[in-house]
Amino acid sequence: MNPKFRNPLPVFSTIFKWVKNNGVTDEMDGYEKRRLGIFNLINFFGSITGLILPVTALLNDGYLPPIAWIVAVSPAFISLGVLISNHFFRHYFAMLWYFTLYPLVTALVYVNSIDVGIELFFIFYAVLAVFFLQKIRHLVAAISFSLLCFIMVYVVKREYTFVMAEINYSFYVLNHILSLLFIFGGLFLIKKENIDYQNEILVSNEELNNYNLEIEQQKEELKELDQLKSKLFSIISHDLRLPLYGLKNLFKSIHENDLPPDEIKILLPEVVKDLNNTTDLMENLLQWAKSQMRGEVFAPDVLNLTELISQLLKVMNIQAGGKDIQLYLKPSSLAFAYADRGMMETVMRNLISNAIKFTPHNGSISIQLIEDTEWVEVSVKDTGLGMSEETMNKIFAGEYFSTKGTSNESGTGLGLMICRDFVHKNGGEISVKSKPGEGTTFTFTVPKA
Figure 1: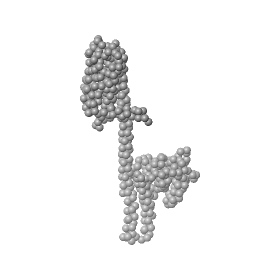
Figure 2: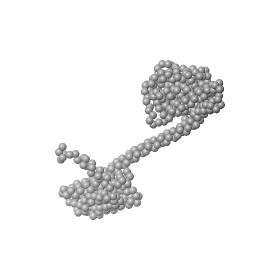
Figure 3: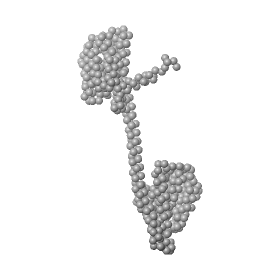
Figure 4: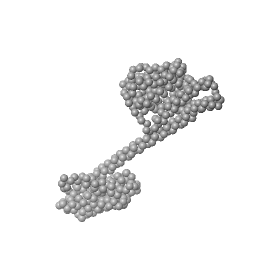
């Protein structure tokens, strides 16, 4: 492209940014920077006006008195003084210079009995003072000075030797147009910058609120994790330690007292039961620890729930057979879910194991699968002891409690807590219905495949 015809917009944009950022410092907040930017732009256009007006007057055939020429070039002189003062970071002097000289020069014209049609600029100065002057005494002084000049030279003094509308009408019209342009242009810039600043504040507040919510969420998570750790140590110190002490005492008695085989056989079933409970507890502790790790992999996939539960029942029939408990799966038709297989195995194993613990001899446990358009509902119903409202609240509140099953099996609620966590991670919900003496039904949902 020919250099003569290059797009001038980037150049204008660069000049515009330079003018707007003239005198801006890092110590200023966003509002101060915007306010100074508007003040710079108004004076930039004012200085251009001060250069254009004399040229326009020269090209015009009408007569202009000497004082009118002073008025014509004064915007360039005053506004350039403001821009230079701001450039050297003398912001207070720039404000004083502007709000003193502009009303004074404007009033000087009318004092010399010349009506050039620039009386609207007095209103413009007062409007700008409201926005730019932050201290009340400066604001009152600037507005009072502008209004006093307006009243004295235009309201009180009504007779003029030279009336621009009669001497040079086109120049008179141009002055009024410039007055209106500066008034509405200044108001537009102020309004626009205020809206932009308010939008920035809203965005910042929203980001701050999101950050506070994130901090609050992390605080709650840390609080919950701390409670879980306390529960974990309680379990380790009580339910995990006692079976190990029992096993230790058995071996100690065998070693020191030379127990006969018959007595050992009597003690072994109780020790084996405690070890089985300890194994289940250890499995749950490991699953809980794994679930709290940030690097835990959540891998949902299409899962045949019917097949998974059938395989678990084959393994858990041994535990149930010790109490002559019957396990049923109904219906046996295939049901597919979209969930993490390892998590679902843990959930089902804990629910079935929990049901076995709290179901008496010759009881029954039924697992039911119900499908709808979006979910697979799994329920584990037993004919066990049931639970009170208080116990059910403890389960889902994550409180530590120790209970005994129908054959003195220990229970801590940790397994059910893991069930709740894993079901939620798979996008489902878990609930419990129970009454003392009427059995318990745990129900959870997972997304259908």
